[in-house]
Amino acid sequence: MEIVLTILTGILFAAGLYLMFQKGMVKLIIGIMMLSYATNLFIFLISRLNRGVPAIINKTENVLSPPFADPIPQALILTAIVIGFGIQAFAIVLIRRVYKVTGTSDMDKLNSSEKID
Image 1 (cartoon, one colour):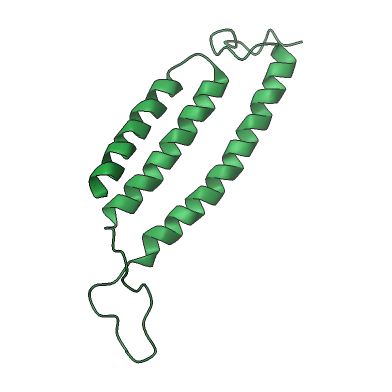
Image 2: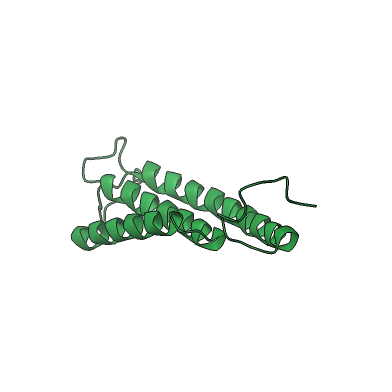
């Protein structure tokens, strides 16, 4: 399972970087989204995958014993997902507005702000 997730993380990083170096703004946003997902998977992988072990202390114990799942990375990933959705929504609205004003989404043609009427 960890090998598959590691390969998937590498593919997402590579595809995200490839899309970020393209000319279109939509590809740039999709590339940033893929990098965000790859980073979340990377954090999830380095925090160790523990299946079937508790993340909280049972009522009968005072201290959590060693095979346990760390809830901190999962909480960080959930926060990152929420913030990422907000940034993606803002970027989509920004792309739409730029396209309406300039008539293009090509990054090379948007090299100067002085051409906008």
